[in-house]
Image (cartoon, rainbow, N blue to C red; front, side, top):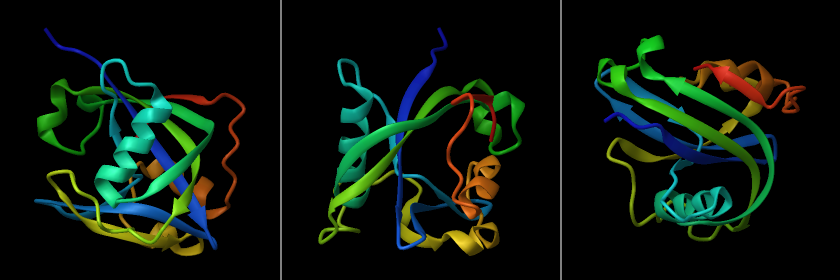
Length: 153
């Protein structure tokens, strides 16, 4: 039986830079927001906090929900292994509580190679995913009339 995965991510902006997780696959390096899959019995806010600790080694304060999107792998050309993958992703505005342990995550994702502060003004020069978010980040306009964005990548 196929299932739908629920995930939560942190959007952290400081000094006009976006904190991202750098990943590498067969196609090269790409950047994503920190976060990941929700565990049974865990709230979305708890998921964001846990994932930021695991991937980056940082504690975060979880703020408002910015948007929710679906990623239905068969509808995108990102990775052929995603043909049966379906995820609902919730993105929250977050802030770092303490950045002193940044980069010292204890349970990194398989393809994770590090982290990077991406300048918002030049984010389109990075292979940042999801691509639809780039123009909004570049303009720092992250308020959506309808926070459900559908199946976008």
